[in-house]
Length: 257
Image (cartoon, rainbow, N blue to C red):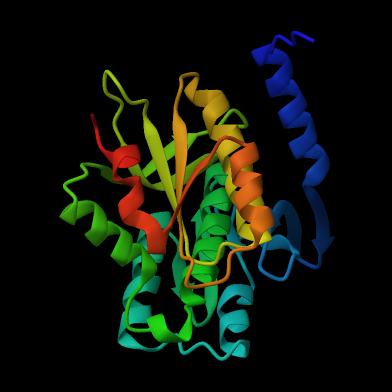
């Protein structure tokens, strides 16, 4: 059967699905917002919002992210992890008060800021859960060093607005050429089902808005176990994956020519 895709219809279906998947409940002076994103416990990501004054809204994770890391035995006070935490806070414009991740916004910028907070929660959780033999090195630093050594030219920490109007962050952008399409890159330290679903969620929304032949490339840290279903899932969505132990086999995929 020859199926023709109607971009307006697809957008309407996507937004309708998104509206169905997001729930908002009042808890005291806060609004509890439950998103379609999943954390590593397979629970839906939740944040809390309240009016600080007539024009300012405070959105918080209620210390969920940092407390979970501590309960998992992760030392967030090591020098390397403090540097990594600072990087993510700056990247997503999130403040840290005690163990609480917080963003401040007005009603107009609310959708963008809430997504920044959720992406910060997911990325901090993923990158901090390092395998024991890799504590001295952060996976994303290794990827950046690899790209630099192989003279693969990229823009770092780029943001795109999806069809839904949400803003998504990608670790790298490799520009299109005469022979290669634009390539967006994500870095996943823990290649589990939850991170797969979250990545596909943001990619599907992004590529609908890009309206070109953009491709997604995902770097996977295979020092941490990769479920075969995750690899099959990315393949089904036509997403290229680069297992870190075999990274040198994929240079052609990353080169500009």
